[in-house]
Structures are given as C-alpha cells and as structure tokens.
Image (cartoon, rainbow over all chains, first blue to last red; front, side, top):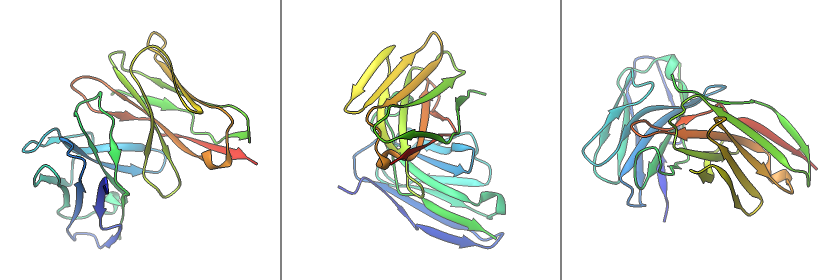
Length: 114
Length: 110
C-alpha cells in the first residue's frame, strides 16, 4: 500500500517551459488536492477534486490546470512556467472529501523555475 | 480571508518536557481541526484530528479545542529529539477547504 505517490521528485524548468506533475493514490479516496508550499507561507491550495469527474479552483489557481484522470490519478499542469512558481508541490487525498476529512500527503515535488 | 495563525518559533524545549503548540483561527464556522508534523524536506504527516470542544489524547499527544476562543493547541508530553519538526495546524469548514497555518518549528534539546 503505497498511499499517495508523486512524480517527479525534483524538476528544473526554464521560464516558459511546460510540465505535468503526476499524483496517484491507492487508498480508494474520493477527493484529491494540489498544494504548494513556500517558506513562511504554509500550504496553499491550488486546485482540488472532490470526486472523480469534478475539479475546482483553490486559493492560488492562476498559471495551473488540473486533470482528474480517474479515481486514482490527479495531475497538475504548468503551461508556461514562471519563476514565481518555484515551490514545493504536494498532492493529498482524503476519503470523505470536504472540510471534515483527514488529508494524506504525497512526498512532494521540488520545482525550480529559472 | 479565512486565516489560521501560529507562532513561527522556534520553540525550544528540553528533552522530557511538555511542548505546547498553539493555533488561532479567524473563521468562527470552522468545524474540524488537524495537526500535522513535517520534518525538514519531507511531507506533512497527520498527527491528530479534533472536532469537538475539549481534549483528545493519543499516546504522548493531546489536542485541545476551544471554539468559543477560536483556539486549538497540541501538547506533546515527554518530548523527544525525534519530535523536532515543524507542526502545522489546519482548520476546515463546510463548503470550504482546509486552511493551513504557517507552522511552528519545534526543537527538542537533548
């Protein structure tokens, strides 16, 4: 039981390049989330998917797109990377969805945009 | 803007002491609260969840919630050097998602 997995672990991009961060969970959870974590700012929600087939914007969605490919997988795409998107990105999942459910995090992707 | 506030620390305690971590939140409608531990360079790991006023104990950890004062805390008894990490507080409300605090860095000194 791997829990939540993310690929890649590290990535360096040049400004303007695109990439997709992959996330998968094997806990049969309905809800999945993408966060970014910057020093001193805590975790900020980018996008979430309450259930398969739905996605919604979080606090900081600009510059990102998401796809809920199936119940297990939720990807985050940067279409044209900017230095301001340098951050650590975490994927999380929860069983029940909504604000009362505990979220479980993947190992993270460290992204640097030069 | 809903906010969760924490003292960034570092909070230093000697080994074997009680570490007390505090969190306040601005959204009176928040229904659920969570404490996560995050080691440097690692992902957040869930320690405790609490939904009702009062105390909830799990091993060396006790979470305390006071909704009237909009305050939630985490006590770590018999602190160990392995408890040295950043502790994140999060709150949730119906129709909204989690709001995380910036975290408190705890250092347990041998």
